[in-house]
Length: 253
Image (tube, rainbow, N blue to C red; front, side, top):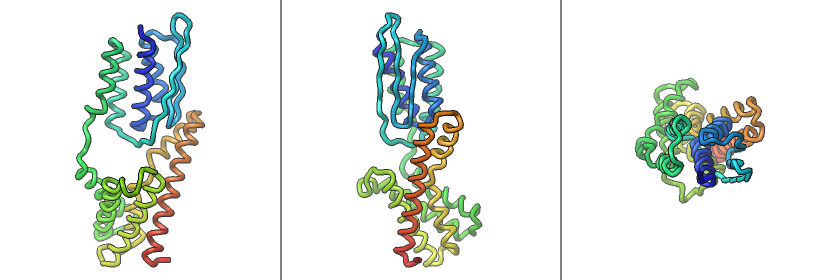
């Protein structure tokens, strides 16, 4: 057996799981089970949100280790589901490593992607449903929908202008959301500026990341949990700064 290829396969699986938003324990357990399915007794797996390290020892006693760094990523539930299903399939009936690698490499291309117009529609619908939760009326929901659409346009089509830094991207989108909310309320399309603004900003709140952070801290993965918590706090700070700047520009302060 080519243990270098097997190590590459396991690291690739871990990276795809992590990139799709999987929890740390899921990444480590999936990689460990895959290696055990191919006959390795005591593989060592260590993962944090931006790095996966896998170490194995061949039957001849030769240790092999690979580390792979992971860039910025979000959450893709569909890809996560397919990675989980493939991992179970490989563990139940381990195929030849080359075939397993081909199946894993094909996952991102086989995962369906929503067209931009549908994603943009979701950015509008989500704030409209948040508005009644915050006590808004129908006009507030409509204004929140338009403000959410402006955030979606900024995220989907303004990447080359606002850069790839998540902190500044979130801050700029918050400025856009607050300015659009202010404009819509001023035009009479919404009644409560606070409700419209908060509803539009909800699409930027890192709820999944914060939930995973708390879960990992309670599970004992302190390093990864603190990393995710720090990322969530920074995102929340960017939202607050951006909203304050937008309202200040609009003459509220």
